[in-house]
Length: 229
Length: 129
Picture 1 (cartoon, chains in turn green, blue):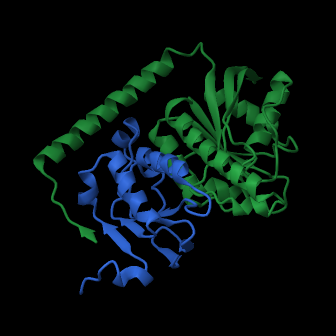
Picture 2 (tube, rainbow over the protein chains, first blue to last red):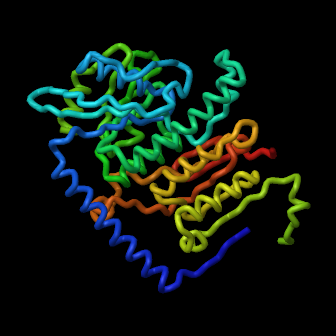
Picture 3 (cartoon, helix red, strand yellow):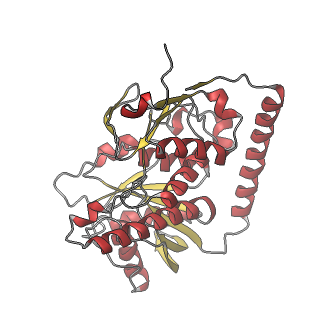
């Protein structure tokens, strides 16, 4: 089926009004940020499932507060609720920043309970996990639109970064005017390719690390303090 | 091209090509409903001009609320890569918008598989239910 439609003058006017509304909202967000420096910034840790988001959140929380954020697992969608660790103060090279870390469920456009059966799960458990995973992804998208001030986007540097989910999410983050750092994780693995990640999103800074092994965390903390501070 | 009735199309895969002009008159939620209603019937939806980032965000959110075991596993979606921030104009960066005009292919996750994708070509394998 083909739909054909010629835009009317009213629709063109509506489009112009939309542009003005976008401009007004953008300025309003910038002003809000200028006057809210005293509050901790909520930094969302986003990325596809199994990129190491919770491992990173735990590493940051343990290094600066002594507590963990949540359980880590190699099974996809271990994190099925957004979790916030408040008042994490990071200091590096004269810069300091107080942030709330928001560890979010991995974002995807599809969830099939059958993939959990491959991890020795009973069907009832797999169905429950998939239902919780879908709720978690929806929640993560809501946080991204409404409730975060900046984003750490975590990618598994052994995987192809040119996926639709990554492209869409980076586009969504950019459209919200949110500052974003790209973290190329799992550099301890032999197949890691940090340059491929950097090439995928050249408009943003890419920092290599291994959250699991704690490699390059000095640079990670330096960039967080500099970028979100 | 002769038109097939829905009964005649029963063994095939329906492809809906939706023009940018058709989508322009719809609200964000109407666009998402149009897409998901088609995809849930097993159709492949091709948007001439794609969705805005905000609409893509809501599409993911609504898709997640509709996933149901053994019935609907979600969607597969492909667009040509976004232009990078370096290519965006000053005004575009200032107001935080990006042209959403990019051909977009959306289908049921269990029926469409991307074979190849680059900045000029999307090649997908579509199977029947």
